Image (tube, rainbow, N blue to C red; front, side, top):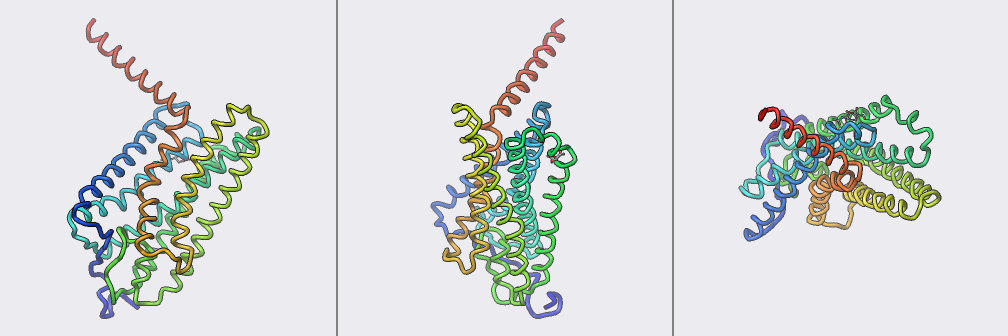
Length: 323
Ligand SMILES: *[C@@H]1O[C@H](CO)[C@@H](O)[C@H](O)[C@H]1NC(C)=O
């Protein structure tokens, strides 16, 4: 059981098999992922700067968005750079500690994002369904508590899982048929007893994934039914369109990992599993800033204000220089 004292090369290298793509597509694939990665970093950095600079965005919803953007940057940076390196160099090695580190950050970010998205849905629910009590319920303390709890729970979950996996031993196969150290795929390779990790993983998926997912769906049902009752038809269309884009992201982000983690012996092959993972590791962090912020009138106005302020400042600076 102990990795230090058995014959298994527990601290040897793993190989990430990634996707089996022909050399022709390799460059195209690399560029696609690189573009996605850069746009994700850019989009999320813009959101973080904008929310920090614009005082009219200093309300709970945007604080949560800022948290989500920080989390998205960590998330893609834990997975995509290594994936890009493997794609371009075809050197698939990853050291065991590196693998555990990647697993830690992946679990940390997914757990945190699950809870942050839940907090955001709760915030919207309170704002739309019980608007009179909004400032009392979503106080500064409550927001900080929700954000802090999301990060802390994500961190602890990740810590426990990566510790458990680092104590497992790996003898037979060192080939990971994935493009990052996916928790489930790595556990399958262990030669020691892993049923306790699988049980824990299932419980965590239910508590941090399935339960919040159902809560979010319920809150959106309440939100939509409230809107139908009160809003004018023009306002209704706008809220519906933002609700439906939020729901798309939520369904993608909860649905894809949960379906591959929770459905036992699910029908999809490992190849399909990898394609699904690509959705929640590359596509969702890229969509988040677009869906939650850049389609939002308040954010666009803030962006315009900052732009104007900046140019005014520049003009004043040149004027004083000239006089
Ligand atoms: C995260 O959210 C909390 C609570 O709203 C806020 O106080 C904090 O500034 C946010 N942190 C970041 C980095 O966005």
